[in-house]
Length: 433
Image (cartoon, rainbow, N blue to C red):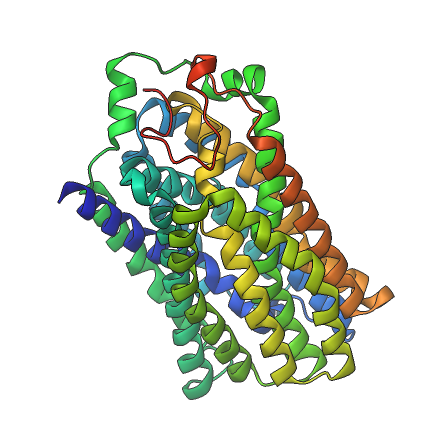
């Protein structure tokens, strides 16, 4: 029962926090002309996507701080803190005057809010992932890992659905503010739930054995820096597809195909709802056939089919064609994302897992997920949307394959050589305690 309660509250807490974070991804098309007005649509879109990138800039700093505290003080307290830190800038965005009202201070304020949000997420997403894995029933560890993605998806559904309601029935000049203001209350609910969860058994065991180093990240960089590098590569393959699905494609639909904002948000709801089914399904398959196998097949399919899919958009640029491509990419992306945390988490021991996992993932998120919308808009103006998106996605998938291939050769700190197992073999413990 304690495990069930911990997993459920972790998933709910993640859903509530990612409601706040994904709001910006879905509303960037609306916010761009309000905070970055320009006679040139390309400049407005580019600055809007740059503001999205700012949501990743502080992730490494957040990973360092929250990772250190999570390895030293425990996962539970850090996760409770991060959700409150996310709620404050969300409220500020909801009440922030636009460029027409306060001029240059508006985009500056928006950028600062994005920086604070990115700092919070740097410790939140991986901390929640580790929390779930360290509570998991080992036979279904990939399925447990997939539940984090389900929580993120539910947060996205809540954000997008409320966005549709507000953009349809309220004045567009201020209706977009309501979802951001409402998100603040969700943060406090998540804070309450996370304080009532139990600390993970792995962390408790590690503390009893007094195995926590004074500076976990330094230990990781000294003894397992390749693990961080492979984490960055895997992150590229996992996160890039979803940035294209949730940010770049909606931008293309609205600004290039001139699809209404309400319909664009409805596309997003359909795609996110599909992931609620796909994530646990892929997690179950990974538990049965192996995490690496499912991820490799998905990434190879992504490499093979990406360019033909985007050529289809070029040949017949319609909302229906884009939706079809979104569905196919979602299937591939779910196969990569559902079990990925199992492979990455096992590259780091309990006493430094939060620091190593969070730091590597946040660097990957900044380099690839954070820059993808900005680079795609920039390159699309030079080589076309099809080539820009297909090139970025294919390159990221190749890096993901490289990271998965070499991750198995990383020696975990504190383990004897004969205790090291392949990432596909679901262990009795994630790491020695």
